[in-house]
Image (cartoon, rainbow, N blue to C red; front, side, top):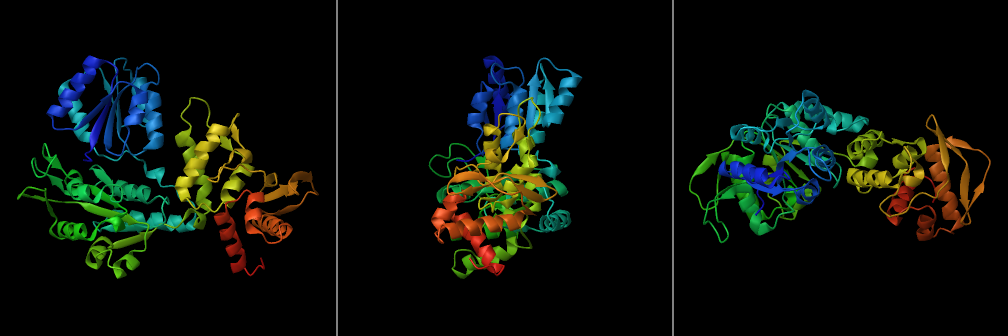
Length: 456
């Protein structure tokens, strides 16, 4: 059963046992490990908070914190150390810790910190990065709706950042100091989702060895985020509708109702109107959830965001003490010209690959590897004020020199695609291979050219 837990990372066995006992006695679920390396393995979606020692063999607590911030920037982390100084405390808070505890500390201090930060959202306002006019408009609307109590439904392709937007709305609302509880409705088996959402009493079903609060109960006074809501089965939709209408929930196996004061943000990457027409989603529930709709465009539809998001991801994933590497202008041009079928999730992967591939302090175009696994062997370019100067081109499988030509980037891309397509007598698979593009990406680019009236 999916239950929110605290992850304790402590290499002293006696202290680890004491921490677990104190938190468990206060009715908090705990997972304990003895090293940072084990912590990264244990870091699943059920972890709602981390207590970590700083001084440990192998990876220390500071490095672990940076790794966790890269993987789950919203997860609250409290660092513990016996070597506390004001300077260390300041450094820890600047690096992403929500708090800092100096050993030895009293049991009630530990419990106080746990209750203060458990299931809280530690993400920052600037995690929702915008620069393109389309996404700037969405951020402005998010700021306005955040001040209301209206339920919000976010739609958009997979990987566009719907959860990041939901967390941003929570951070801008009056509930920002309360819990933000996220649940992926498609990731939990149908026979478990009801218990996870609404909770259950001991003995309510086989395996219910003790009472457990549901996600709605955990999010009370705060915000619940129901991701992939369109995948919820219809009979459970009816129960969810009742919870939203009555503003109260009953645990499975209980006759007692629990009043709710809660903000609901939902998200889906499917066509909800089509799901309603096909009987897969209740229309009355849709209108209850869709009070304020927000549509998050695909990354290819907001190209000005790419540079800013890429730089944000570089900061997040550059966890070593050395200076953060910079993207060269050629590398950035390659990122901007890609169509990003996997959206921000794909961009995140590409940035992580680039950090693996680099040997210096710059990320070049050859370090940019897309999801087809191929790096660039296209024309090498230098970028000057938004234009490119061609240095070499692909010709019959070999790189040869050519006259310097200064062209607009999109015009050069169009010229290159059409020339390689012509050389291959219109064979699209061969053209995609020569250009190091996936067939899907090439189809998309050719369709765009047709829309512009270009004969392909």
